[in-house]
Length: 562
Image (cartoon, rainbow, N blue to C red; front, side):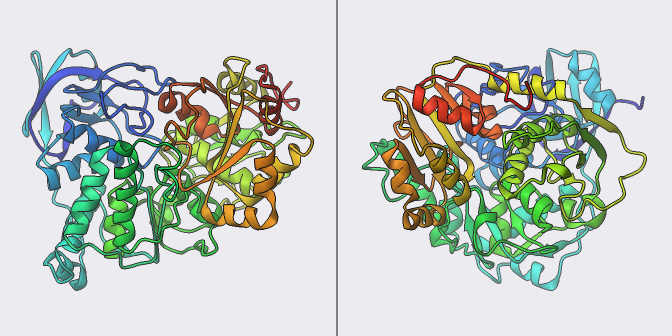
């Protein structure tokens, strides 16, 4: 093993008790920005408080919105003293970068080699300086960041110098700083962008957006917007408190004034202008990034919140990761023992388990081609994969466009057996039998999914004590309205809500009395307990219908796993 050493990513000084996280962490849905505590009930260190601590962790995972949570923690005085990663990391790093660059709240970020990480795991207290990490009698040298050669065009330099105004200059400064820490040799043009930072995680998101707008930032490429945190047109009538609804609406409006299109969907690939194969784009939102790379064959890194706006304003992105051919190749193979006749619930389950295995590596999944997954199946798989993995894409042999016909040689090989599938299902399906709320649309439901639920409920009606909500994009809801699907669902007690998604929904739109939730989303089954404080169970569509009509859904294996 080499001598302990640390690479400075964002320099600075800090000290505090050492907290060691044994798994990667999604700051969005995993950390409460008001307290600094880990709220992800599936994380081994659930309940630990990160405030003022020197936090050691492998890397981040899951949501691109984690950068917003890090900035929120910094502005509220609840941030870690320093973040020490053992692997490459972008999302939390970008939040710390913005905190220091724009708001004078610096937070040291370092990358440790294995020896340094192992040394500090046993420490109780550590002091970080630009030169060393000190823990008791141990002093680990800090290597300053290398001055990487980042080739900027004359146009890039002009934007940096203010040719397009102060907002574009600020965006380019953040973009260049991130590109350098990522090791990019150059920037690349993008044809479009998708903004995830419009979700209101707290005042920090609004402060950033309004600061950029005040500087005159305007998007240069067509830019869509993710789901926001309120139904923009109806939040007052829904009883949302002005203290939350007003800043959430102001945040969305700030991005619209900067030129973003108010699509308000976390599934931009369902829109009519989805990008094509090989197209370089600048998307944020983990499920959308993974779907775009994997299923559409477009090219985008998993850009953190705030960097998404910088890319939209400049039309440029760091040329690293999935923008580069060699970085799109599979680094491991996962063989799936898929049961015959498996239903739609197979896909979120496979994505969730594959993400746990892959961690930050791009996998090739085999054994799924005969199941002939459709677009919604792949949507569910990509979303669940992005929940447990930090990888920006995956390949499915015989299904996705870049999987190829030859399996990669000399890479690790894993297997997800039927026993593994059953064990994973029990873990996500565990909880009370009585159900208060059925949650559909995480990511946003497609028109086909709305039709399927309406058909499954043809002869049923919601139980008096059960609520049901579908979140979907405006274009899907408009088409459901035209086809009469929305009216049919409403007559059976199912509400369709635009603009927001389950990962941003709040009470009272999320029913005040709900304590146990049934969902068909692997993503929400993971994040839901921490975000809502409720028990959240993964179920099949049939389970969701049973829960909705009978008020109960006993924990069970799907027929194809039993």
